[in-house]
Amino acid sequence: MLSANQRFYQFLRTVPSCCCFVMANLKLYSYWRSSCSFRVRIALNLKGLKYEYVPVNLLKGEQRSPEFLKLNPIGYVPVLVDGDMVLADSLAILLYLDEKYPQHPLLPSDLRRKAINLQAANIVSSSIQPLQNLDIMDYIKQKVGQAEIVPWVQYHVRKGFAALEELLKDQAGRYATGDEVFLADLFLAPQLHSAIKRQSSLFCLG
Image (cartoon, rainbow, N blue to C red; front, side, top):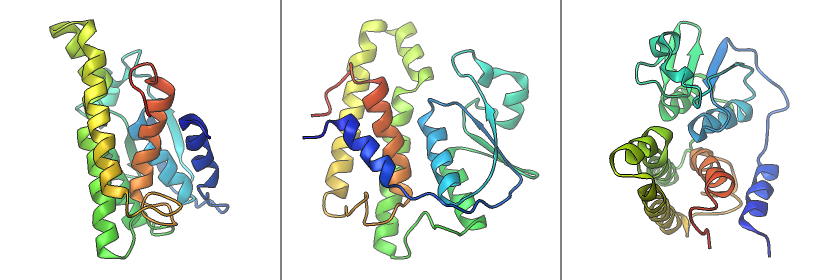
């Protein structure tokens, strides 16, 4: 039986990538361990869009530099620059990319499946990831104590994944909502990667 880690990398090997890359004036401000940035990097690859990668080291506090705060006043990655357009927040970036660069659509044409993809993405982006990011864990440590971080993360990650499993149990094919990679996969894969690689000591995936 495959481990959770093996299943994740098996999934990554099956994700199609575009062999013909499109020249675009794109610049992505990203941190390599950021699941939010990971979503956008997957989309850029799927759509075959070339981009300039600008690293932002969150552990060194580079997201709080005056230069970066001009791009995103809240100080979060990712930020996408497309010519004179500056966009922050991964979901906004993904929907923008899907409108401007329609190759390999991130949402299915079927209205029901489109809604399910948006719901799954929202569960990850509002009910899992932001509740266990660096700012939140630092705040809990300062206000409540180090010992409260683990149960906090366990509770919200387990709750979120349980909701996703219930939502997607009758929808999945080769991927989360069928046999093509869509928006839900772009949110699920990085969150699972985070759980497996960075937080395996905090909770059991079962």
